[in-house]
Image (tube, rainbow, N blue to C red; front, side):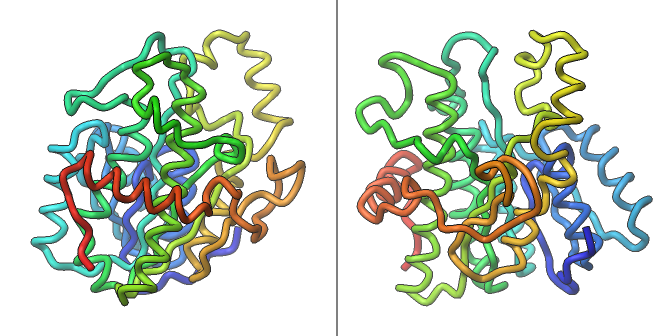
Length: 298
């Protein structure tokens, strides 16, 4: 992929130290962006930062420790970034997990279902915490959603999965929530003059991403390697939609262009209907403020 022009911009990328996220970080750095990488695994983050600096001369990479399953950790990073006062021009909400083979429902120390917090609530709390520096940078915020969001919905009567838990349902709901809230962020920014634009991306089918490592270990290595070679996008190719979305100012969905969005180069599409229902988006925004005990500035 040719470098995308992000010269002079500061970019925050969650999950930017591995898989698809590392491809996004590489594309941003190659385009001239300064990278802020909040990482869960510090050692892995250091290796990724060293690789980026080796591959891209002059790459400017700074690491922060972040656990999206801990609101205390999210608030610490948010406070640090706010107090520095450096405008953030790009925010890529990329980190995510799917617990398809990780056993029963898990709950974070904050009391939330773990997938819902890691994929959605943690990101919502982070955006709220750094809103002043996003506004200062007239930021572009992009959410990494999933094909799983296309037919997903918010399960209002069982939001935390405590009345019957299904891992894929939890994952799908978390990605619907992330997409809905991002579209609502764009709408509220227009209404209140925040100067922030927001959009969506999804990487397609990415067998080599390792998003569900325990699930991958359930299959013979030969099958996994065959899938990585022949199905969907590679992690490097899968970064394309996110980079295209970051370079845009439209509230649209960038997604792979072939096989019903499973593979191929990035193409601009209409967002899934599940991500554009204004009533659901407003309800989610209000529910999120209540769950997190915050209120977005007007």
